[in-house]
Structure formats: C-alpha cells, structure tokens
Image 1 (cartoon, rainbow, N blue to C red):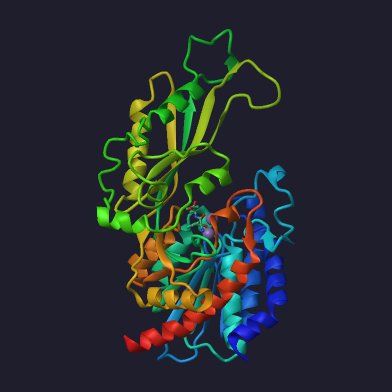
Image 2: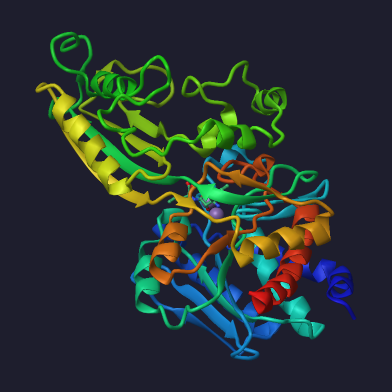
Length: 457
Ligand code: BES
Ligand code: MN
Ligand code: MN
C-alpha cells in the first residue's frame, strides 16, 4: 500500500482523532484550564505511541509540559525534528462563536473549533503523516517530536528546555506547520516571521474613583492620559514616533521588493473579507510589505472606568492597556521593550503614575530558501499540489524559531497550510478538510525528498 492509499483509507479516523483533541480546552494563558492543558499533552503523547514512536514522554517544566517522542530507524539516516504546539489561545468572547469553541463541528468541509488550525490541526497532521509512513513502511528519516504547550504565551519554558537538551534535540532540520499559504491555488513557504515585544501599561490618577462632575476638569483622568500617550506613538504617516525605533530595521532593496510584489495579492478581496473601505499602514509600503517586512505597534486591549450598561458618571482612578509591537530583522525585542518603557516613564505627566510591565518578547526570524529543508519542502508541494511554492514573509510570530536557529544551529522549515480566512485567534476559527488532508500528504512527501536531498549533499 502506498502512503497516499493509506491516507485515503483513513480519512475518517484522522478527522475523528483531531476532533477529540479539539474537545480539550487547552488554553495555556488561563490557569483555570491547567488540567485540560495537561490532558491535551497526554492525548498527543498517547497518539504518538499509537502511531509507532519508540518512546514518548511528558517533559515537565515550570509551566505546561513538553511532549517529546522519537523514532530512530537508522543512525545514518537524516533526522527530522518536528515542532508544534498543543496549546490554544483563549476562545473569548464566547458569544461571538456560532457554535461552542470546544465542541468541534464539521460544516461545509471545514472544521470549526478553537485550535482547528492553530495549531492542533496543523500539528496533528505530523502525527498522522508519521503513522501513514510507519504503516506503509515508507519512513526514510529518523523523527523527533517536540510539541509544546506554551507557544501562545511566549514559550519561556521551551527556551530553557532547548538550551539544556541540545543533544537530545540534535537533528538535520526542524519541521514546523504553524503558518499559512497564500491560498489553495498558490502554495507558499514562509521564510520570514516577525518578532514582538508585548507590554502592559497601568496609569493611575487619583487614589479612588471620583464623581466626574465634582472633580472633572480639575484633575488628570488616567484614561485621557493613556489614550493620548498611545496616540502620540504614531504619526500621520503611520510611522512609530519613538526615537530610534527604526534604527535596526533592515531595508529591502528595490529588486527584493519587486520580487515580493510578484506574489498574488487581491486588495479588493482583502478589504471585502474584513468589511473595510480602506487599509491603513506605513506610508510608502504595500500591504504585503507592511505585514512582512515592516514593524508595527498596536493596542491589543484597553480598559478602565465604567463599561457596564447605561451610564455612570465616574472619573476613574486607573486605566490599562496591553500593547504589542511586531518587529522585523534586525530589531531587538529587549531594546524595543526598554524604549517603550522609557517613553511612558518620560512622557507621562506628573499628574499620574505610570507602571509598565513587559510580558513576552520574540526575535524576528528569516529562513533560508537554499537549505535542504526548503528544497525538500518545495518538491513536496510540487508533488502534492502540482505547483512550485512561493517564498513569503508573514506577519505573525513564533518566537522560538529564532532561538532554534541560534541555540540548536538547525535550519527550520515553515511548512504551514493555514489560510488567512481560517480566523486563527478569532471567533469561529476553522480549518479546511482539504488543507488538513493535503497537508498530511505533503508532509509525508517531505520526508522522502529530504532523505534524497540529504544523501546528495
Ligand atoms: N501560529 C501562530 C503564528 C503565525 C500565524 C505565524 C499565522 C504566521 C502566520 C502562533 O501560534 C502565534 O499566534 N504566535 C503568537 C506569538 C505570541 C503569543 C508570543 C503571535 O503571533 O501572536
Ligand atoms: Mn500557532
Ligand atoms: Mn497562535
């Protein structure tokens, strides 16, 4: 039996197992779900054992466990290290879901659930591709799996793990499916991810909430101050005003930009999908460039004062915001974090107190298009999709990717199959069955090409 025949014979099984995984609400950011996060780890471990690994274990960390497993078939064969994450983003706001986020359903050939694409669906494709190769005796590489439970909260404990376990994690390539393709007619391979710096700001005015008539106009309102400070961080041309913010930004040549512009992009469709009249961003750059090669700064959440029904005349004591920047090569997350802290401390008026707490950061990553892994991935797409994939720079972040390169000195390959329309992190996240099955097939082909290419080089 060929791998493809095996895949076609086991579509229902592959789908049902993923649905079982999606039923586990493994939200890493919320302590309330800690037990479920562990259950998801155990599920992945058990499925890896069932698929035929030599052994699988939960590696305990200060936070959520890392699932590690391996199948060593021949020490002279190349080794593929698969990375993915079993944790998911919070599903809030629940009321915006058409169907409960942890009760997956299949509708119009799509799986709807939190994590359907990011990253349970994409990570599980690797478990099933491995099973198919084992069952059909077609596995040509050693495989190591490292599936973590803290990607959505910054991968802090994975960082410590990879620094300590370099020997265990030695491999010839790191294979990751946690990114997107342009569309199902235009496969692509992600060669760039943005980094980030994420902070929380707390502005305190008076020591208690006050009557907004009795005190209004006479003392500083922390919400007014905070929103002004935030607004001042960007100018009319969509540029970030912090002194030095762009100092380390790598500028792309006209030739590189022209190459990037060749990737298909339909601005009208993009606007229509989001129901917006106009896009907005840094002057002088296209939408693809704004997301792929330029940094940005955004408020991710803001609160304070009275937000309940009706009105309450109150002058709040405190205001809060969560702010993220997305960074590109060669910006340094720590440096940008300090820059933002300094901005708030220096620019907040004496009438308020300001406290800035950094959350997580991440280094941007740029991946080579010349590696064995890239060549193998390209050939795998040609075999399954019938098209040569285009290299793309994506706006999202997987902070651990830069660390893999730095610490393990292994070139990662971002073989993702998601679509922008999968609505990851949003209500009604989904993943197309076509992408799920086609992804499994492509991953299986990757192993064949990778072992061939590795032999030659
Ligand atoms: N899989 C995403 C990153 C991604 C999505 C890359 C789409 C490219 C295309 C990942 O799970 C993610 O959401 N990362 C976080 C990182 C953060 C929590 C440290 C992000 O980008 O917000
Ligand atoms: Mn992800
Ligand atoms: Mn994510």
